[in-house]
Image (cartoon, rainbow, N blue to C red; front, side, top):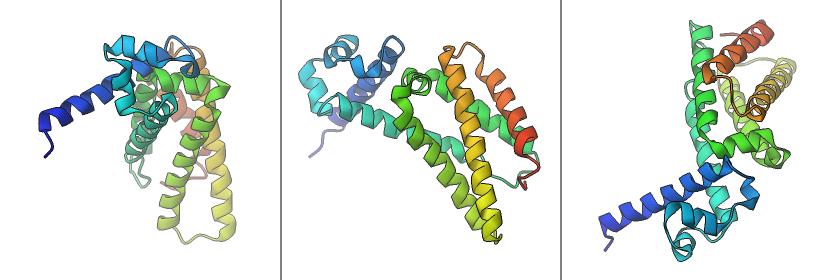
Length: 196
C-alpha cells in the first residue's frame, strides 16, 4: 500500500531537484551542471537524485516536457474570435514573458544555440496549436491555408527572435514592456491577414 506522506515527500524532492537545476541554469550552461551541484543545492544525496532520475539528461527532459506542458496551458488563453484582440494578445504575451523570466533554464535555452532543439519543439507546439484551431474553424481554400501557414511561421519566428534578444540581455526589460512590443508587432504586422 502506498504511503501518502512518502508520495508527497517524493514529489517534493523531485520538485526541489528541478528547481535547483533551474536556479543553477542562471549561473552556468545546463550541460555543465552536475549531479553533485544539484545535490549540494537541494541538500539531498546523490543516491536520492538517482532514485528520481536516471541521469542529468532525464532531468533535463523532464523539465523540458514540463515547460512545454506549461506553454500549452498559456496557449489556452489565446482563442481567436475575441472582441478585444489587443487585450487578449497582450494578456497572452504578458503571461508568456512572465513565464520565460522566471525560468533560468528557459532563458538559457532561448539565448544560446545549444537550446535550438528545445526552442524548435516549442515553436512546433505553437504552430500545431494554432494550426489545429485554424483547421477546426475554417473551410478555406488550400491556397489560403498555405498562406496562413507561412504567415504563422513568420509570426512565430519573430516571437522567438524577440524572446531570444530579450533572454540574451538577461531579461532586463520588464515582461510587460516586452509583451507590449510583441502585441504591437503582432497586431500591426499581421492583423490585416488574421480574422478575429
